Structure formats: C-alpha cells, structure tokens
Image (cartoon, rainbow, N blue to C red; front, side):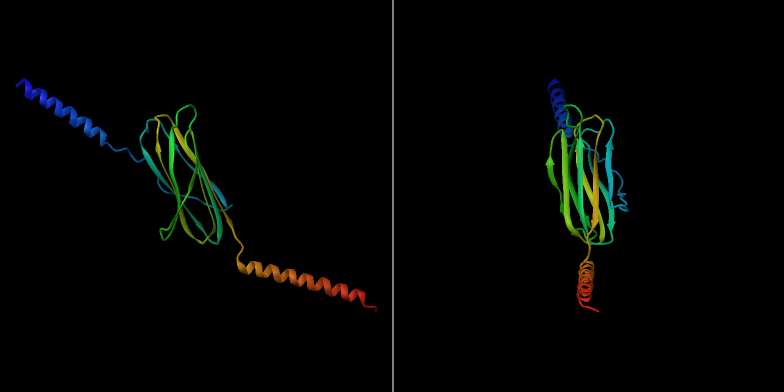
Length: 182
C-alpha cells in the first residue's frame, strides 16, 4: 500500500510540474486605437502596470491617409534600473488589403528601439501593430510616434514647372522690350 501511495505522489507531482510548463501567459493588448493625423504626426503608447510579468501584447493603432505620403514610425521602450522590463518583438504596418511591411529592430535590452519607414504610401486605411512581452513584474511600457507627410503629385510638379516657365518667359519679354528704343 505504501508503494502505491508513493507512486501516486510521484505521478501527481510530475503532472503538476508538466502542467505548469503548459501554462500560457495572458494577453494584455489594448483595444484598437485610432490615431488622428491632422497635423501629420501623433504619439501612441502602452503603460503596463505591476504584476504582468510573462504576459504578451499586440497593440493596434489605426490611421488613414488621403494622399500619397511618406511614412515613418519609431517605438521605444525603456526600463529603468538593471532589469529589462519589456521586450518589443515586432513593429508592422498593414494596409486595408492585409499587406504588411515589417519594422527594423535598432536596439534590444534595457532600451528597445524599433523603426519603420516607407516612401510613397498610397491613400488608404492602415494600422500599425506593436507586439511584445512583459519581462518583469515592475511597471513598464513603451511609446511611439507616427509621422505622415504628403508627397506632391505629378500634376503639382507639372504646374510648378509651367509656372516657372511662364515667369521666365515674362522676364525675358520684359528684358527684350526694355532694350528696344521707343
């Protein structure tokens, strides 16, 4: 009987140890947020409270462009002290068709830094996805900025060149008119 009890205790402990390895972290993502780009730039971020060690997040930031634009975004996370409290694992840009562009990790460790930029972003609805993992139980977080600047279209360049041509023509006509005696 004693052997059966010991065997059951070993199996129970082994099962508990195995089950703890399968425990999944909670997802602490924020609800999707909409970024307004009336001035061409805006800030975003996520403050993580105490006790979220091991949890993951995938935060979505929606925005829309109405003209061809250059796009740039930077996301940084800083953990004070000697503890790396948060790890940014991805920065991606998605359009309405689901096509994506991935960011580049610049720094990893006590300071995480990611950047993403592209030229000639078409007028469309987009979202920026920031993903990561909380590494420490201390409060932490990340912040980012998003900048979109309009690119003049070909018609604008054509009108600019036509205007410069007209100014040159008028200047030459004035010069040639002033040289003729009256």
